[in-house]
Image 1 (cartoon, one colour):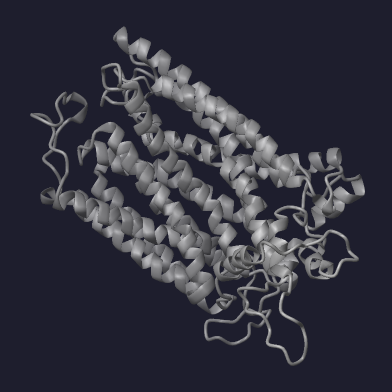
Image 2 (cartoon, rainbow, N blue to C red):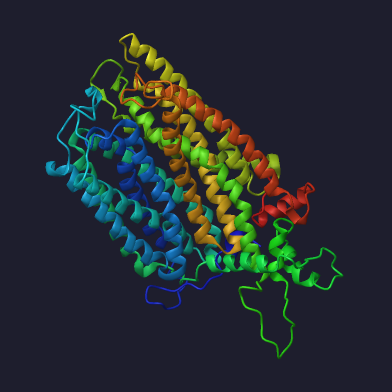
Length: 589
């Protein structure tokens, strides 16, 4: 059965709760409004998040390592809160109302942030952090008390709103392609990713330029206006939307599986089909030719009936006897966890491009052409490089690489999601290698009184752009197909964003841990100074490159384990089996 068709089985209603009419509701006409709020919301949040370190370090006077942690914790929280957005949407509100409510929450955070950046009484006195050598004493005054409270309140209102919006924008757009229109889902996902890249590109060029030349208050204000325009776009399409009613959370059924399996841990779930209890376990293993039937066998015990079965007997509690579908949900969630975990290091590298690489660019000659001073590139705008490249690479990938790979592999998708993720994880280490080498050269040039051109750090952004095209899109596609097979669309979509969250949180942990370990023998540690010429950012980059290589080999083992057991066995599939599994969303790597 086609994956897209299996995801479109739920009944959809219009904004008044009436059944949808195919010619009036849904389709690309409705999805355009969702793409509009996605582009505008991404533009708003990217303009804040990607240049936030400049504001926290330069105007709120946090030390560089603390400012980097503020940014990574903020971005990590956005992605972690995607789980909350998916849960509320599935259980209580639905996608549309979740987006509308938390869109206004995000808008209020942008407004508060712009007010703080504009009003002097809400900020510390102006001071040049780069020239201050004693921040805690006679140097710059760090924001504290009421001023820091306003800062963090504004940031986490934005984080709460944006986090709850993200999974619902993707899910609500996909909901518009029910029934026969489901075949257009790939087109929608391509358009959604293109919309994302376009929003990022505008934010990292035009809006960052405004922040640099007109002030952070004006830049944050434009983000607020863009967010308001996105909400208007969302509401404008209300009459055309297909809305999936809340279906209830998956947490309770999955919890029931673990409780039932634990309470029946002493029961025997035999593999012999002639045994008395074999029939109770077989649905959990084999229903629908389930890929993970022979993994996590202890969960199969949740399907064993203990109480006597009969017309006059009381049925067992739902916390003691589960269905095969519930066991498959639990197994699917456990099976995708190692793949999810292997993408965390990738997003830790992304965190460096949004923090230390921006500061790295600030310490270089930003003039174009180099040395002329006629035009200067805002360092934060360098993050636009991978997105500008993705606007060209994504269509080229779809139109050129996929057809070529179809001929080579003989499969419908050409390259599977797990293969895409593997290519991205294998190449991301080269981004950190390039960053480390450039930082070493920059420090040598600074010691000689010279400034390298900021164009030298372009390669690290270009390499990461290629890696992201494979890893990010591959991960979304992978989770989408697993979600359709297990009935967990919203939750696994939100889980995609949690990889970003844990990656940014891990970055904060690594920065603090590296500083603590490297400062044991005197000095401020690799990243303990506010001056990159005194820090050893190049060594930190080399450490991340090594971690990325190690993570890639761990991923290969996890992907091999994930694919083991397709069709209930570990044997390699034939060409016909591979083609069949692609059709069912169960690709072989």
